[in-house]
View 1 (cartoon, one colour):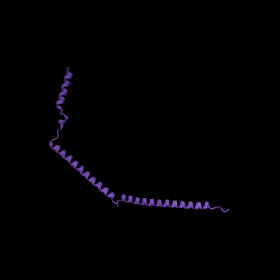
View 2: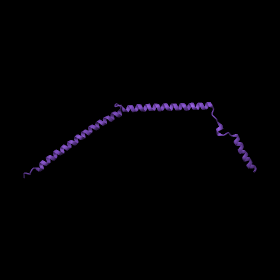
View 3: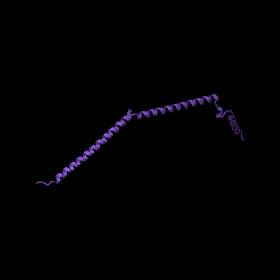
View 4: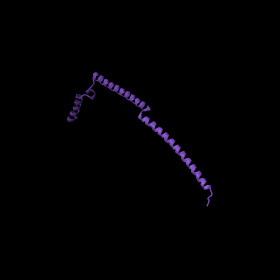
Length: 118
């Protein structure tokens, strides 16, 4: 080995011995771990509570939507009533048209079946 090679090899070995590995740089204490675990438990409990509150709000909203007095349901019921009335009016109009056509056909048939008096 040449001198520069020996220096580089020993320099690397000395540098490795001086700097601790990333795992050895900071080892959390028991108190730090306990504090982190408590913070995680608190965050989890808050998330569970938020989920429960959200579900209750959703249930209340769905129950309100199901009430006949809710504006959306009231509008739907009113629209349904108007649609039924419109359907009945259309049926009556169709019947009137059919009857008018039958009357017109009968009148036309009487007019064409008479002999002309010229």
